[in-house]
Image (cartoon, rainbow, N blue to C red; front, side):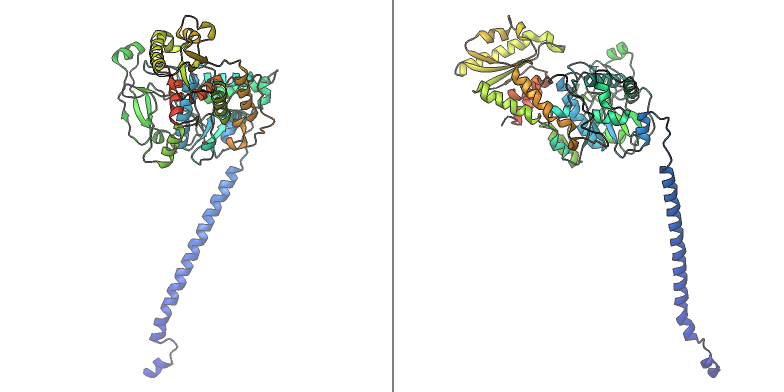
Length: 493
């Protein structure tokens, strides 16, 4: 038996030694089968995806529908600025922060004519509906374009520090509507506007304003406004402290509550708005009221360093260098001495009814200054009251008082128009590095200016920031607040 065993080619030892080889072959075979299956699945998925991507876009789509169907990787954000320049600048800063939080390209608006579009009153719960507000802003923006008076916020404010940051992206409103509406801009602002372009713009404006409702994967037109919502970011949600009184609810026939909503949770990538190519807001203006904010309470982002740094950088957002330099030039060459700046807002809104209080306060401050300063005292006056109406007011008295030497500027002054021409020549807003331009031909589609833009307001603020004797502003004015901010940040140094 031992002899037979030794002759057999398959001894016990040899059998044991072959088993691992068999198992190894099985494992290798199974691995190959799984690998082939995975390659097959991935290939099929790729083929299906490619075939879907190659499907032709229907020819009967409107330009704005085609814009969304073409699947731009960029996701855009638009909003509706309103009221005076101070409010518009405040809204722009809020828009920059929100665009940064939501990772959207911000559509930079024009500067609207003073109070061409009004919101209403948030504390009184009497405001324009978001759709109507957007449409008013759209129509006025097109009007500015047609009349050759279009000045972008990016022409007046220096956005270079923001453009260089990876946190935020911009696109000029004109560039956007050219792509979105399929309109050649020169046909809009020519002396004989193209009727088809006018029709397309009207249709685009209606769509973008939200009158067609929410359009899946294309447009999310927010209906939130200061009556219902206070936007927050990582600071909690729930009922807001400020609510409509019973009297207001009865008068306005409203029953809703104001809620604090986290803007990222509500409108971010995982929300219903997240997949929309365009997110449209109404007003983004806010102000402290009733122990809360009227609409936006995002003043810091301690848990998001990038957004927190963005918020801080916007506090000292400067005017364009041409405006700052002209302001310094007027202060150093024309006034050429220490001076005090007076800012009096008298002609509109709540300020019409407070002339007496405003003048009394300023007279008291000036009387104190006269007692403690060498005479004459140089004054730079910034006011919306025309010089022909100064007679019988504090300004008329100051202009005749030998204790004061009064300086001021008017819109028609050569110095102002020269600064405006510098803004036109530079055209910061349509430089390639400051806008997402796609196939937009910057040279062929620039609508020209019919007149030099009025930069008086911005130039006056720049001059006031240089007043070494101080600044006295009108209480409640957003322009006065902006000047104080410029002075604190030493914009004139």
